[in-house]
Image (tube, rainbow over all chains, first blue to last red; front, side, top):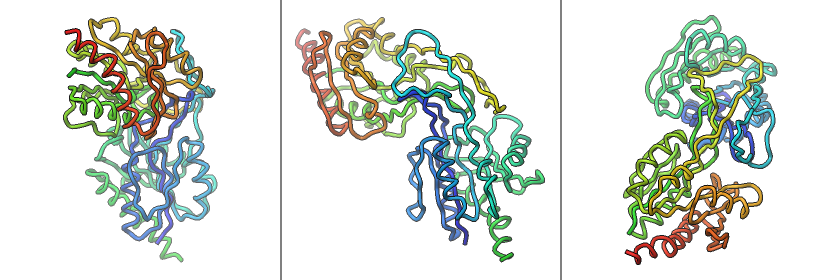
Amino acid sequence: VARILITSGPTRQYLDAVRYLTNASSGRMGRALAEAAVALGHEVIVVSGPVVVTYPVSVTVHRVVSTEEMLEVCLREFPSCQGLIAAAAPCDYRPMHVHPDKIHKTGQALHVELVETADVVAALAKVREAQWMVGFALDTEDLRLRSLAKLEKKSCDLMVSNGPQAMDSRDNDVEIIDREGNVVGAFAGSKESVARGILDVIQRRLVQPRCAAR
Amino acid sequence: VARILITSGPTRQYLDAVRYLTNASSGRMGRALAEAAVALGHEVIVVSGPVVVTYPVSVTVHRVVSTEEMLEVCLREFPSCQGLIAAAAPCDYRPMHVHPDKIHKTGQALHVELVETADVVAALAKVREAQWMVGFALDTEDLRLRSLAKLEKKSCDLMVSNGPQAMDSRDNDVEIIDREGNVVGAFAGSKESVARGILDVIQRRLVQPRCAAR
């Protein structure tokens, strides 16, 4: 039995008091992964952006809004966990200037400078001790290539790659690659069944080898 | 009995295949208004951005994503309606350039030019014949003043003003002003009770006078 940190849902990066940048992540994949992990007997900590889905009652849920908040909570929880499944889609750009009030329309264009937010998984990789890490990559082209590049950049053990049709959908279609770029799992179907497939790979390749080594 | 067009929820303006600008409108106020209008025997057409709330089954719902789509559907439905209640919070800026794929992070800032989207209510005002129009204004400061300015700019009969705390909340706190700037109603409480108050004002001031004039 492991203690597993799961990130889930989108984050929001506000431009002013009302408008923000985000994506259509629903938290359904994160919820399905939490359910699959709980079913295997694991203790699960979820750090979730704003979503409507409800997580299993046996799971500890931390709610956050921005990527900075998600990172902050993850940095606090990660040291007590044995592994990370990063299913969230944190907003990776933020407006450099945030207006405290609502920006009023003037008829003119608004020039906004977007800067990259901190990379949650890469930041956790820097403080990892013995933890295993599973990342998610969502791309629109060259999925396997970009997935491997992200695995290396974020120092993950496994990377789950999916396309944009995964967002806000009940189904998913994923490939899991390892550090050598081998496809070690491929699952398609409901997010619940895909989550069980992913947890099965994690269990065999990451959880059990460490249990056996104890 | 009138045929009433109600707009509801947020809209999204995509920057690329994944990221978009939006706001936290939940569609709860629009749903509550639809319920209150149905309870008074009216026929209701809802044009809704992406939301999770479910509208009453007796209501015709048109789902849209962007402000342009919301305007397009409204322009088609408005001529057959006697009135409009514009409870939606359409995203009023859109990235001038939309990237068809996901923009890849480079470590550099992204300069984005946001241009104003079409104003749905102002555009409907231009094609109105005998229809009455009720707008919603959401501001962070000078609520009554800005509400009156919006009423004039959008040629509405009544303007409902609320603050940003209305967004994604179960409660609301509104003031209704008429063309002379008089406060003709003020309601606070659950969105359901606030919606009944707003419909009561609409019924007495906009629906019934026209029925009597027939």
